[in-house]
Length: 326
Image (cartoon, rainbow, N blue to C red):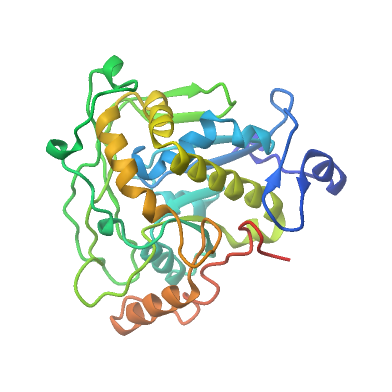
């Protein structure tokens, strides 16, 4: 990765001037950075854009990344470059993956840590509507694209020991790059060819609940650049909270930035997914349940999917969420 993609804050004073932090709560940033001066942050999605990413794209559309002095670049995975492999290799700063994938990567001694949960619980627990029940009059950009999109089912396979599971099926496709008014660049497939699996080899009877989609970074990034990741995570929280408040507008942003998606179907799926984006018990957005992670890692160990005793240790943290940390 070029030096330009790795620009980080170098002075505490500069950071303090850029953002105002009330305790450890949500970052409030009112500045508009000059072109090409924002911190670059590359993010590997877990699949082609879909309803589970609605808060990410709404944060783009509403300028939440720019307000926290971030220039976020999103990319979809390929068969030869899964998100966690890109992250471990240092090709991206942030990746999206499932809890099992994080634990399996750590079993291979990859120093990766989950810092927030996008989907609380299994993806398969979200009762997605079928096209016949989506209903509703098109009120968004789908009429302009003339397409209807969504998730495609892939056949899950049981993971081999010490290897990561695949969440997506991929075909070769062209890509395009666009820059939004919020200053965030997105690289997306021109056709939805990389799609999340609607089932997982871990979605069967007797398997403890786990987080279906989490934000993952390298441990060194937390040590050296915690404020940067905190700003990203808390901008995402604002994006998902705004999506909950206005699902129609959030879906419009998702489809506008990814024209291959169909508005009506994505709106139905966004509405069906909203409950999975937020934790219970009054916890802040992104909360990672320690008890749930412990129970799932213990099950993986019993099933001989984890052999490294250090894999579950500090595999997740809530320190970068709003109101948490030191």
